[in-house]
Length: 253
Image (cartoon, rainbow, N blue to C red):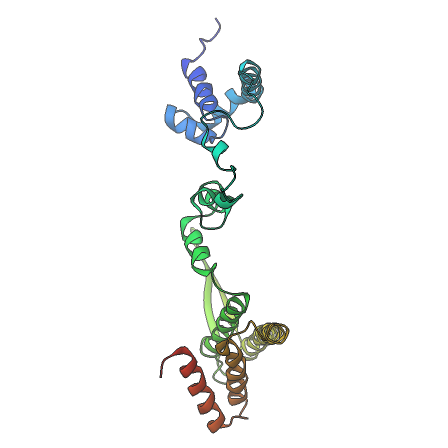
């Protein structure tokens, strides 16, 4: 005796059709309280995608033909009349741009907030932010990756298994020289990247001297002086002067 076709089978396709195929099978299974494997089997056996495409093609053929150009009463038809700025609604920050742009469609709100916060900053300012983040990371690594001496060994349990009679444990041992070698390699890479960004910042200043602010020009000199201080080549008097210059530019004093 043939099995009776489940009424949920047609309901599953209707949900799939309602969402235009843009719905996870797991979600359909959850709505109908059925296993996702069953939904997947129905989709393949009943050729949901072919059915859906056939329905869409039929809808397109039956749709009334529209005249070319803006339709009467459509607000779009008034957006490009003489006196209106062409493309105004697609400028950054415009509501139409926010609603229709790729950013608003695909990026999470937190990311969009960051983009809005930095969109008014100049390339020089953005590059300087990256330099400061890289420089701070290098300084912070001095404490985190510090190796006290040659006896500074790190022993850490990485795995533990309980058997019927035997308990298995795995430990990872890092000798002082291994930790120091890894630290030096990571520092070398980070410092190389920092030097590259400082060089790029300097080149941007040199190529656009009229566009750079006094603060942007003073930043690089301050960073060079700080770097010299770390190397033991500092001049306290010059550093104090640079600190005062930056403070005056920012309006702190």
